[in-house]
Amino acid sequence: MPPAGLWLGAAPIVGSSPGLADPLPQALVLTAIVIGFATTGFVIELALRGRHEQGSDHVDGPQADAAVGEEGRAMTLADHLPILPVLLPALTAVLLLVIGDAPARLHWARAVALASVLLGAVFAFRLVEQAGSGALTVYRLGDWPAPFGIVLVIDRLSALMLALSAAVALPVLWQACAGWDARGRHFHALFQFQLMGLNGAFVTGDLFNLFVFFEVLLIASYVLMVHGLGRERLRAGLHYVALNLLASALFLVGIALVYATTGTLNLADLALRVPRVPAPEAGLLQAGALLLLVVFGFKAALVPLAMWLPATYAAASAPVAALFAIMTKVGVYAILRVHGVVFGAEAGASALLVQPLLLPLALATGVVGVIGAMAAATLPRQVAWLTVASVGSILIALGLFDAAAWSAGLYYLLHSTLVVAALFLLAGLVAAQRGEAGDALLPGPRVAQPALLGGLFVLAAASATGLPPLPGFVGKLMLLQAAAHHGWAVAVWAVVLGAGLLTLVGLARAGSVVFWAARSDVPAGGAAVAWTAWAPTVLLLGAGVALSVFAAPVQRYTAAAVTQLHDRATYARAVLPELGGERADSARPFRVPPLAPSPSVIAPATQPARPVSP
Image 1 (cartoon, rainbow, N blue to C red):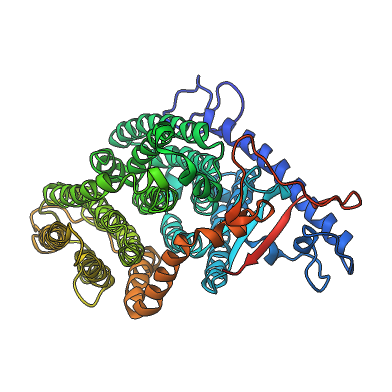
Image 2 (spheres, rainbow, N blue to C red):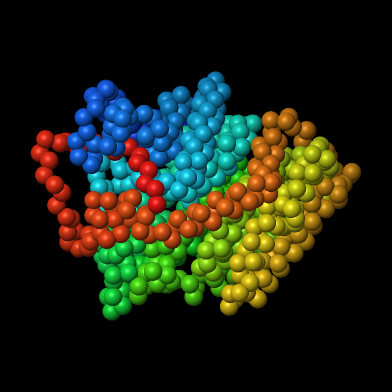
């Protein structure tokens, strides 16, 4: 197939008709040009500022302390660490588009993509270390003060989600480099754009940029979804695109209603303004919040908005489905940030707005998920339904609106994401060794590596079920303890324990069919694979086991993250210092206290990270 380009007649990404122009390369090239120019200007600005401030010991005003440290040092890369998880994949995607995806250059693309994800993992875990000390880091783009400018905020929760994203992305990309990336166009560039959207959603400090990063990750996921083609994949991809476009429209409507009532979309500012909206005027605000719950619930796969997920994830290629395991957690993260904090217990007339809805729907999600897993006809579809069930368990924890339950939910979120990603990769390995039987849960030929794949399946199934001492057991135990004195305790215990039992039965049935009910009268399946093909699955499962080994420090971190989430005053002081922090009065029409005159001072163009201790 000739390479795609910006001209009529270039090869399309879907199909082979030479009379069509491929819109994907056009969109990617234009995006690369815009991002390339912006990034180049950003880097040049950093270099000029570093040269200008090198050796200077003069500090003017409160803004200058971010550009020049207390000892007059020049800015370093560490000062810009909060933006690097977003900037790095964007730059890498541009570079990968320049390299191209021709077979002769594929090894270069793989090397660049893997190096970028590995470096991003280093940045993410460095941010976890920084946030673990209690520092809340705010990065203001263009030095525009919040709530008027764009801010990136790194706290314990956002740093944890960045680390989880990196922990999933690295093994998944390694697995894709075994050959999946060669089955379609621009895989590595799209993978990087997906990471850019995921990381941006976790670090953004306002609702509108949350929408922007949602769209970035969704646009990349649209193409990754149909990577490798196939009728079932295209059909599921069409439904996936149509439903997400509808959800995006509702997202904008919800944002508009919130902004119309409060006059802001900055999360720190919203947390201050929402409690001030009196009950007679809170109708539009609450309608917007409920619309946002619909959108976030759709992204998270909350019943009844979860029916799209099993077919979509089951149709995607194994590495793509494994990467998509983190996408549902973006919806969970948004629910926690918006409905758990902004519309939490201190939201005045809109306090705990979604509490009557979230817990019953989460319980239903857990039930529907395990029933779907029991009835699944293929291994990937079973894992997809288990993804829905795991989201139910996490949202049960959030729906309790209790600090201990939220901590348990965050711990279980880490475990479930890792084990679901591992199961999707394992399903791909099993299907490749079963010949025509593929991933169907029907008797087929014996797999070429029964001991290896069977052992990995047993470990993954035990963790997903919640058998001790694996992390699934630890997370569920923490959740059950937190729910013990809640009014819905009986329902929570019944669903969590019942879901675990049914998960065990469903995965035991699947394992028996795949590994024990082998048929000798059918042609043999695929050959054994090299260690590089199954090592990524081992890495993901090993990371899950590590959650059990280090359960105590991880639980302390998640508990501290929840405590930090509830500390609105510290968050406001970090994000809104010019407006008085938790005493900020930025209500319409945006009355900003005048700053002290300093005509000789020119504020820097971009302010680096500045830790603020609680």
